[in-house]
Structures are given as structure tokens and as C-alpha cells.
Image (cartoon, rainbow, N blue to C red):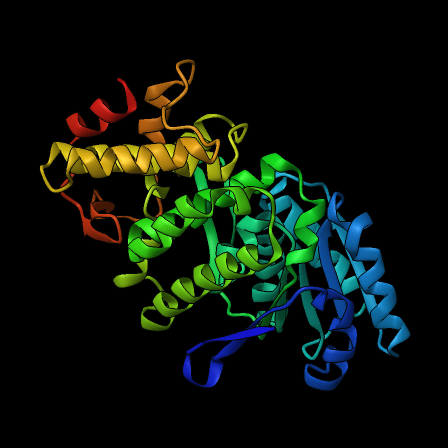
Length: 358
């Protein structure tokens, strides 16, 4: 078992990484995180695998627990889903001492976290991520939210969990495509903060793809440590935390322009390559490092180019509504080396056009 801390003073919380820990969460809740009532929020994919079993375990431990299930996918990450969940919470009698349990992938964590942030002006939440993407990235840091037609994650709140429980065993039920989806965020962590980690992903490729328990545990731990350290330094993304958005500005625009047919991690992979190419255009990243980034992303089965049939003008329109845009300036994260990035607003339309193929 490995336990990391997200250091936020009185709101610090543990990230527990342990094979099989999902089986013991009910007892842990009773001993450590008591509540008047628990409410699991998950999607219709995860519910059958883990939601119903967790609800039963909590009830057998002598605690009241509801299970709210919404349709899976980014297409359902919107305010209508949140409104339905809030109504259900009220109808089931959740109060200010109740606790939300976010169970599932990134979409479930974002939605459940936002419900917890807004129900009765905020109730506690525990994150139990079941996808690689959620385990290594979105479950840590307190970002919650939903999409609106104008763009991705434009409505949301910072609402830190009380704890994060990561059980690598649940990845055995994850579809292969979703596993690759999460690997984009893993590669991102190496590029922005840890060249040795990036190298490890190359050296241990076979073990990573085989879901080797020891290597997978190491991978999750290193990614969570990088994310936790950055969040502890800049909780609400006023400065340093923005480096975690490497590949996301263009990636979110690609994702939205595809009507969310392109998975988040796949879109981020495209965005990372695009930003690395901008770095080369600006003369701050060598072609050899760009080649290494592209090679790693391709090796893990992720895309590196904007699909030919995707409307470039739609991509650019979504860039104009990016949530990181302030006073008509959009911030971009550019690589200067593997393991080092910078934050800049000095990216021209011509440079964007060049890397998205307009």
C-alpha cells in the first residue's frame, strides 16, 4: 500500500493506492469518514461492476447508502444531469452531514464532485476512480464541473475530496481504448515534470501495456505525486498549476469540435504534439525532443494529428471560449525540454494554424 498526501493545510487529504482496497472501503468509511448518509454517484457502465456491490457493502456495515446512476459518456456531462442528481439527492433526504462517493472515470468524478460542491452549498465527497485517466489525474486536485455548448468544463467549482482511494485491480475491467485514454495523461506528467518518468514509460512499455501490477502501481504513484505536488503549490490554478494543462487547450477544442467523439486523452495527445510543434517553431524545443514526444505518443497507440475531417474553424472557435482565456489572451503550455515546460500567452494565430493544419 502507498499513501500520498495532497498538502493543503487543514484541507489536506490522503491518496491511498492499494490493490484490492475497494473491498475494504465500507469499513474504512465507518471508522474514518462517518456521515449521516452516503450517496454513490456513478454511470451505467460502472454501476454493474462496482456500484451495486459497494452500496451493498456499505449497507451491510450498518450505514445508509443510496446509489444514483446516470448515462455514461461525455455527452451526458451537462447541467441537466447535475440537476437530476441534485433533485434525487434532495428526494432521498441527503443533508449537510451526508457524503457523496464519486465512483467511476473522469466524467463521473467531475459530475459527482460538482454535485457535492453545490448541494446545500457543499457536502463532503470521496473520490474512487475506476479508470486510469481518473486514477492518475482527474480524481486528484478538486476540479469539478460540466460542459456547456460553448465549451468543455466552463461550469464548475474547486471542491477538494476528503480522500481518494485508488484500486489498480479495477483496471482489469477497463476497455483497452479507455486504458490508452488514460496513458495520455501519464505521458503528459513525464513531459511537464519528470524526464526520468518519461524514460521509464519507454523502458517498461511491455509491462505497462500488460498491466503488470508492480509497474502499474509505480506509474499511478508517480503520476499522483506529480499532480499532488503541483496542486499543493497552486490549488486554484492561478499560476503553476496551469502546467497540468499541457496539451489541454488545443485538446479540449479538438474534443469539443468532434462533438466528444474523440476521447479526452486522445484529444490531449493531439494537443501535446501540437504544442510541442509550436515550441519547435519558436525555437525553444529541439527537433530531437519533438521526435521523442511523437514517438512515445504513437507507441502507446495515441493519435498525433488532428483528423482530416475535423472542422478547423470549429477548433479555433472553441479556443476563443477556453476557460483559461483572460482579457482576450489564451495561455498555452509549451515544452522547452522533456521534463520542463513554460506558460505563455505569446502564441500567434499563424502558429495555431500551422500545427492544426489550417
